[in-house]
Amino acid sequence: MNQTLVIIALLALVTLSTGCATSGNTVQERRNSVAEMEEETLERFYREVTYAKRQLENAAGYGVFSNANVNLIIASAGTGYGVVVNNKTGERTYMRMAMGGLGLGFGVKDYRVVMLFPNREVLTRFLKDGWEFGGHADAAAKASDLGGEASVQGALGEIKTYSFTKAGLALQATLAGTKYWQDESLN
Image 1 (cartoon, rainbow, N blue to C red):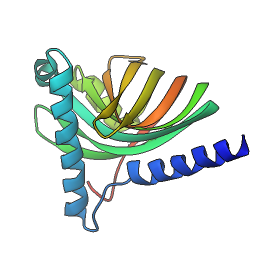
Image 2 (cartoon, helix red, strand yellow):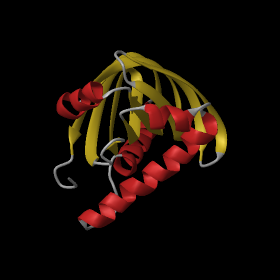
Image 3 (tube, one colour):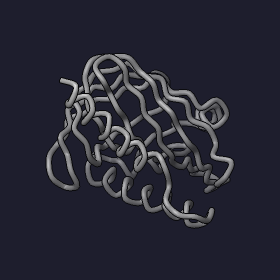
Image 4 (cartoon, rainbow, N blue to C red):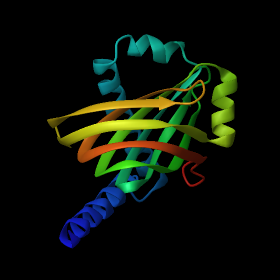
């Protein structure tokens, strides 16, 4: 059992270290890294979600985030980065995030999230306060394009949220709170 915990802890460290940081040394390189993640995630969103493009275009804005999550028996934690885009002005706000939750399960997962903000007030509140609360339930066994996932994610409030596993092995059901804040080094 101790070896299993050590392996999970090592996987968690590797996932968190790669999933929670943009790549590059300069501000522009890091912004480009976020833009690449955003483009890749939106391509998948359009491919897998009915009417995705229309939903995004009709929203006041959207956010795309890269997250790394670890769940060990009853506790869940994660970190990540992303960008929120105001559809009216085109303004991009680079952000960081940290998540904590309680529930059952274990695993390590690198996943992407698309958030749709239905109106300007919800978008403004998110950029100012940066809180999201909700539930997550998923089973994922995925590496690159191999494997599969089944996820359900619900957020309290008006933000519509979609989650896509990039890689990981996880079986979990959690209630979580996520704090988002502006990344001063990229804005």
